Image (cartoon, rainbow, N blue to C red; front, side):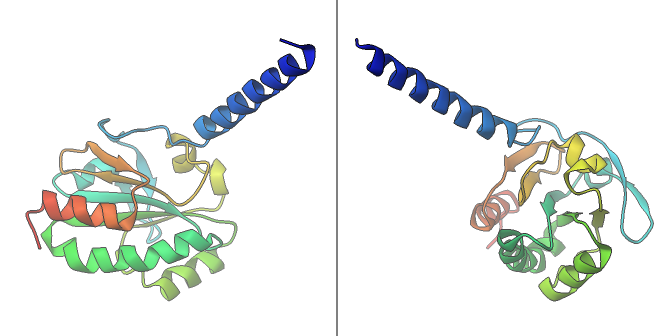
Length: 171
């Protein structure tokens, strides 16, 4: 093999390793099949909560931002899922990765995020929950079953609905 071919091969290998490293870096800390950690956090209404309070329910832990176009599009679908399944044991905890409270409040209102469990992290990706869950990109979601085990990570709204329908024996 010539020196030119070796250089090309090394460059390709380095590029592949860089892409894989970047992909791994952007992955959340927890994966499907793992138990959701019982962390404490403050809700936007001033109450303190722990994730263990949602045991017995299916819950979507939803990291998003008012400045994130894909998040805002996903919010409409999540609002629809909440309306459809909340009476059957489904809840959503939204964690806003933000720079300003005003933009976040406006987005919650505009997007119709009617569930009562909202967390605001003004430190963006350096907030305590974003760091604990190793969230470095949004939207990031964790669908958790009634036993506190993660069913799926970064699912589409269609995948979430299918899993809820199967789990809750519904329509």
